[in-house]
Amino acid sequence: MKTNPLEIEFFGKIDKNFEKEFYSCAKTIKYRKGDSPFSVDNLLSYFYIVLDGRIKTYQLNFENAKEQILFIYKRGDMFDVVSLLDGKAHEVIYEVMEDCRVLQFPVQKIREWLESDLAFKNMFYTYLASSIRYTENLAVELSLYEVKDRLMNLLLENLNPNARFRYKVLHNLSNSEISNMLGTVRHVVERAIKQLKDEKIIKSGRKNITVINVHKLLEKSTKMLHK
Image (cartoon, rainbow, N blue to C red):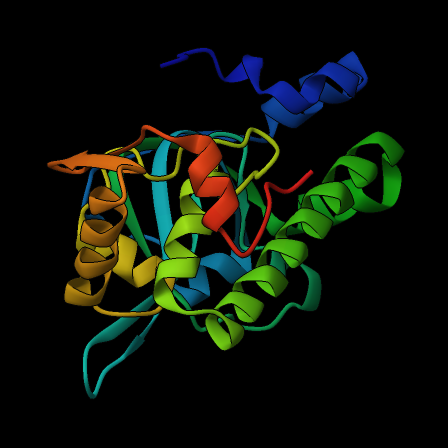
């Protein structure tokens, strides 16, 4: 785990003077696993970038307790982009999945930088485009593919460094959390995991799934690794 917030990777292309201003406006905050500190009102006033740890954002059906994970944020991810851009409340739930640190910024300062600093603007909109693509792919998967297909694609993207929001995302995730990512329930995911184990494609243990035959997984998957 890196401890120096000045090592955030995207600053390789940012002017050093801007970098100093950026961190002078930031407040580093620590949260513990299980915390839900990001309220709708809070996210109208502050913008966050993750330094380490993981935070999930999800929707919940309060009638049947079914959960759909939208994003699992990790180092370098930022939120809430929606409230930042339109200034309106974004009705999603945030929960800290493992102890984390974030940089907190006043939303208005981020908006000013988007107007005044071209490099920061380009970095931000590149990130925004990747999140839109991810959301589109998630909608397509939930609408058009069976759970086993969704799981296979998740396993592939978990290995793919170019799949920003899913690379190494399965680390230490329970089957319940995986089912919440895939828009289903645990026993359906566990059945799909068993099928892939029987086909000698994966092996699994407690909160750990390892692909042992990538070529076979690629052959069976309905989608290829994202480029």
